[in-house]
Picture (cartoon, rainbow, N blue to C red):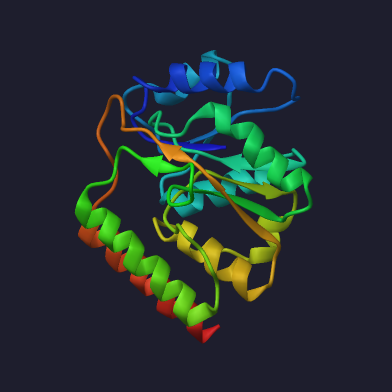
Length: 217
């Protein structure tokens, strides 16, 4: 399940990487596209992916994908080639071992990132520490979208964050519901082509709002 916006330069390589890594699995690829003017959706469809459309935000796109997905294991990943397809088997194994959610972490031993400047690294550390303090969790990463879910788990979380705060909301609600969560090491590669969608100040505010809003539930 891959949210996209103007990723025509990357989507073919993303899908070919998935195909190589998923040879022993029966799977589907769901693209949730924000009506990209560069032809991302058309290219993905030509390469065999199912395409949905959503114009609201990343969270809304993921929720639409969760409703459509039919697999026993549902994986969310990015379209900018930052996620390594050879880690898909690790995310699948986390669910097959009995966990509800398996989250990639760039800050476990064996993980890492080549796409995080110092200010983002410090911001992520602050938000992870804040969530762990307020909710009693032990996460090592927070705003990373490479993760897997057992079928039906996303619906149990009752997600409502339509934008960039979706990963933070997932972490918080998984902890509040005492779901079985596993973190596995993941390496985030630098974006290859296209424009990054992150906006440090605006997205940081969204994450902070999400953290405190869920204290009231």
